[in-house]
Length: 307
Image (cartoon, rainbow, N blue to C red; front, side, top):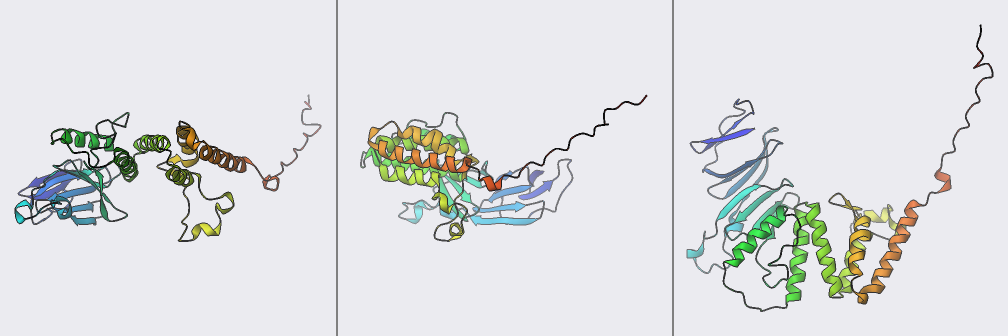
């Protein structure tokens, strides 16, 4: 699929150059256009309206406005209105719209929640990870954070008004949630490691327990039971971004907790619980084993050669 704008009207063409549909009348010129391999088209007009179409099925998936993003949060008069500009609008790797402002704040539109999520900003200048990059290989979130860091370097020096530990923890939690929203497994795993190491260093047992419980799952007797369909306790998913939660708990979370002896009791507790889960999973009920049928002996004259 190719897209050409002529006289402010978008024209859609096939790969061979055939015009796929009539000109699209948008009311104002298109300023950002992106498309993917599944015939989905993202378009942002000069008036700040965003559209996403499924051109293959000729349906509109989303129609929204960027007004909530470009409005300056601290504007005190009408002179500040429209001061924030959009520098990028495209599909993210997970297929959701991703908008970046001139302030380098990045917003992802969650198609399930039907709202914008701010996944990159400069709200944590006192964080220990504000000037250092926590991702070994820059993924989509990492590149957004690098741009934020470069933009912050040009701003005046911030004043230390809050505890570094509080901002570091909030920063890591935000990064963890952002990598989950972007569906980036490698960055999610790296954020999780940094977050667990920080909590272990701070001996924050309540948050460590909550994280471990979310990766361990409900008690073994409740797995697959009807109680898991209770709206107050939704069903537990054993995977996160294609990774097994028990494997992450065993290989990443629990080893990272071992760095501080103050959380040793909590570590031992979840090591025992995880061992019980794995032992119960590997145990096979003898009644579930289907006995093998005895093989019939070959006939006595099967190998007799007649002359």
